[in-house]
Image (cartoon, rainbow, N blue to C red; front, side):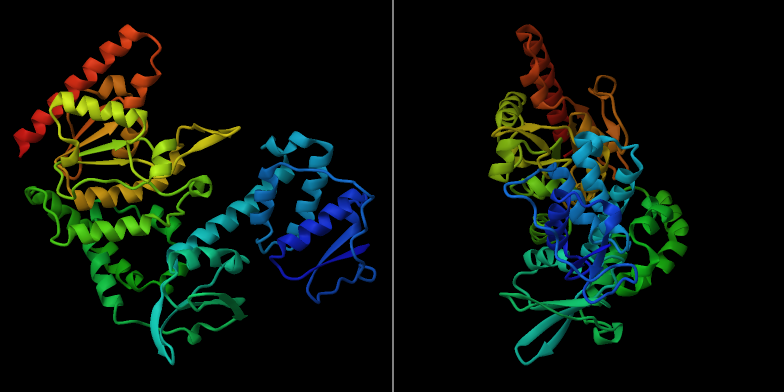
Length: 466
């Protein structure tokens, strides 16, 4: 047996170097014992460096395997290093085996990676900083208990998100610190080392209680996204039992109360700016990995009319604005013909990142999938709550799904208003890009004319409701 020493439980680079050398030397998975730090294995021989590969030997693996390994290696499963090396050996024999979702080894490694990504998301969502004073001013300290070895891998997110703050995140395994310029690490800590509360938390609790909607309460879904073990780190969690207990009575009162005209808070513009700033660091789904930026909505926060598209395209991703590419230019001309001033509307997308595949230097559009739409619906709901439009128009099937929460057929639902839970009026029509894709010029002319007629009717409805 050969010992393969690693510097730590998340030492991906050390594993990759050793795995490549072992694979080139023809070492089988059963011959290797992966060893972390000073650990010793009773069945291993003396620690040996990885064998030197023959001169000029090399091999490659799919990028998807590297990404899978980077995540899976952070799992706490003690067999993860051996599993990944076994999968590497399998890929060398059968290069396409990573695409076989029925393969037991592939499924097991993917399950590890999925659990790690979920844990990383939970850390980003449920870390709450409390302010402390030290010799250099204010420092913000948070406590978190990760399930896997994700702390070091997650540090970059918090550096980007809170670059202007001095902060520390304490965990049982290790702590990370940011002084405004560099990241440093420290030993693990205890929960008592982090502050218990903060004066700002009363404001946060008030905000959370104000936006809690009993009509949307789904306890099972809430516990799935925010398990109880994270509640003790969240100031708002102390309100949850009472809010849940009173949800049925509050929902009955909402139903019995006549609807009021939509209104916006007095600081809606500032709230929108804060929301947009937060969205710029969104990592709610994997789409952010290969895009230029988040493309948030734009338009007056008091707009009575909101248009929701599918997702930003290539030009929107580069410009950081929705509907500026070819489909956006067609959309602008159709609005003008229908008598609608775009500058008085709010325009956004169901998904805020550009989903695509690369073909050479080109980025080809791909339709967002249901998990991506669901992940981004949170941002869309915040836009709805701030803008409070009287009419929301879904452009295309993806936008329709985001608007109604289910799959829609445009041909069946277009051309008629749909009452929404918020009291606003919903409409569903085609996306302007549909017109660009039509090869038949006569049909393109007919569909464009129909699109303009629908926009004209919607414009009249907006004026009538105003």
